[in-house]
Amino acid sequence: MQQFLASLLLIGLALYICAIDIRCHRIPNASILGITIVLIYPSHSLDLPSASFSLLLIWILGIFSKAGMGDLKLLTVLLLLQGEILLRPITLAIGALVITFMIAIHLIVNKSLKGDIALAPAILIPFTMAYLTN
Image (cartoon, rainbow, N blue to C red; front, side):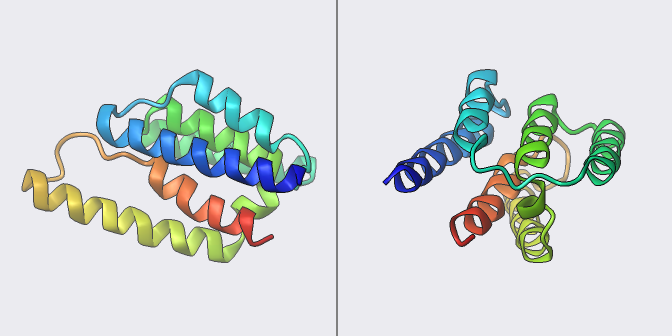
């Protein structure tokens, strides 16, 4: 029963974060805290060297690509608490498909790549799917 409620909370928070990010291009800290609380147990974390290397890589790529701090904080929480799920090949592949879709929608609407593209859907849709099928 607890796992079912945690799954419902995760789905609700993921939908909320995606909607806010698409609409306002912001991820509220309270939402990241909510995801942290829901995902803290059971943890599927990586070993320390893998987590450290992955975090360093994510932050370097995020800063150079000018990703939003909310996206980086969200990735940090997911990596630290559920790194094994986040870095599965299927999760990464679905994430690549979602970001491709988000870029295509952005191009259709804006006729260029200028402006912000919401990354929360590309992070949370594949993660939530992989987490719920775990």
